[in-house]
Image (cartoon, rainbow, N blue to C red; front, side, top):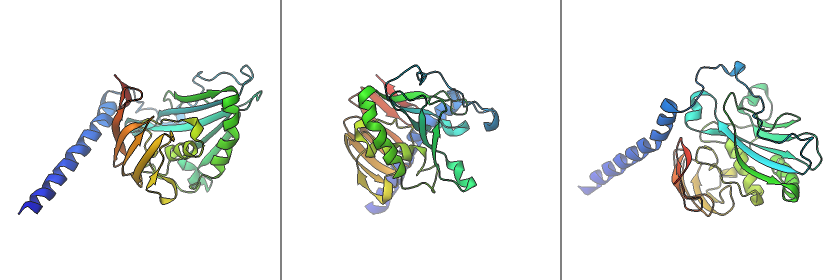
Length: 254
């Protein structure tokens, strides 16, 4: 007699949890500053002016950026990429995963040299998520390049739950833990662990996470705090930064 009631209770709780998770993206879609009108072919990929010009700034530099995904997808998540510059180099190298490369029979892994590292992502303003400068950055650049070469999904892409652009950035961060990268909850795909793993470290390398194909899991870490993942949407509390981690909104400080 109690089992059917228990099953119904579990189902109702799951539905309510999913509804709560969707509130953030719905609010962002309704009231956020998303560009829902511009066709991708006319949207800007120009520099946002956040990075120093390479021929003016001599030391090595490593930066990680994130910007809202194109159109309505931006209500749910962001697109992330990594930019590096060797000491005295006159250009940046940008590493990112671009899904539509598959339509051309090319690898999803894009390595661009000479372009801006701080570009708008189809009109969406990028946010600097992490930065290392000088000797510290110089030591990471070769490791980042090696991790890019080892990315296991160059010919596979799924916007949800992964592997996608955030899976790529998270993979690099796990291979180079000294980056200390704390990806926001809007980086959907970051919890898609490589090679079918269920247990691993989060991108920051400061704890552990349990993740089932990036769809269901939990993260416990110094940087990320406590974060729950339900169907790719993440929510939690970050005690280290005194902030909430909310679907759609990202990190919200107290």
